[in-house]
Every structure is written in C-alpha cells, then in structure tokens.
Image (tube, rainbow over all chains, first blue to last red; front, side):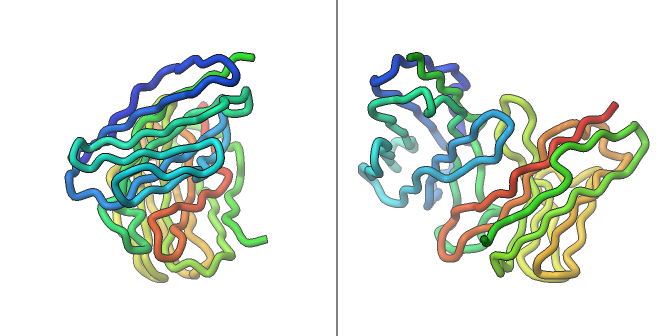
Length: 115
Length: 112
C-alpha cells in the first residue's frame, strides 16, 4: 500500500511569517510530486509541481524534494490570510500523462494564517 | 473557457436511492477520474477511464458505477449498495505530459 503522510495541523502562522509543510511518501519509485491548495468546500488547485531533487521556487512558494529521504516540503513565504487553506501533497509513480490512476494523495495539512 | 463541469453542486439522497453525478469536460482530454473526499482525508480514487468506452475500478469502487460513452462525459452513479455515500465527490482529468490533475468544482452528496 503506497502511502503519503502529512501532519493534519492546523499549522498556525502569523501574517508575514514562513509556513513550512512536510510530506513523506513510502514508494521509493515515485517520480513526480505535487502540492495542491484546497479552500474549504472547494476543489483542489495545483500550486507547485516538482520532479527532481532540490528546490523549485514560484513566487512566494518553494517546493523542496529529497528522494533519498523520501520527503517533499512546501514553504510559503510572507504568509497572507488568503493562504489559509488545506494543502494536499500528491505523489505519482509516473511522469507520463494519463497517470492519474497512480497519483496518491496525503490527507492534507490545514494552514491558518493569523493577521 | 475550457474546464470540467460537475453537477449538481449539492445533492441530498434518501437511503436506498441511486443518484448520478454528472461530469463534463471540454478539454479534449482522453482520461477522466472520479475521487471521493471525506473530512480530513485525502482523495481516494473511485473509478478512472483512460479512453472512451473503457473504465477501470480504483481503490474504492464498491457501491459505485460509471460509464464512458462519450469523450466529454464521465457520469458517476452512487448506488444503494454504497453504505456510506455522504462525501465530497471530485471529477478530474490529467493535463498532457504531466501528472497534474484539473478538477471540477465538486459535488457534495448528503444522505438523509
């Protein structure tokens, strides 16, 4: 059983601080990694994808991947109240398209940014 | 605009009734998926279809059925055999050459 583990939170951070979210996965053969943001009652939306070891930055978001240690993390810099949401980590065994059947989601980390 | 449309957004069902959730996409994607989400839990795959007229069971297919007669449409029927159907249902389709999923807005089913 392939697993993706996340701390459910809530992770409470003051406005302007850095939020750090972690995700570990069990399948050492995993190839692609995603962070989705999900507001309450809404569908998930992709905010970051990462495929190779190291850091990937996009605006205030940085994804970090360490395949040897089997973890992927997400940093949110200058956190804003609008960042308050649940963040889902998803791990895929394949790089190719139409592989959603191999995508495993974690339970999500709820983030609360306090003004 | 291209996207995935789910309907209805909210649905109430009495025990013993079958209900069908609609999912339509105009992205011209071959593959479509149905997920279920329970509070505080991740998404679990119910059924998926890689191409028209073909579909496969996911991790939690019992009590559900699907059809894929058209590329654009992938309806999900929640049957009376599903013992705990109250959940948030998400239809999704993968982007080309990536594992990224595009989601519909979801359908929230409540059993009374």
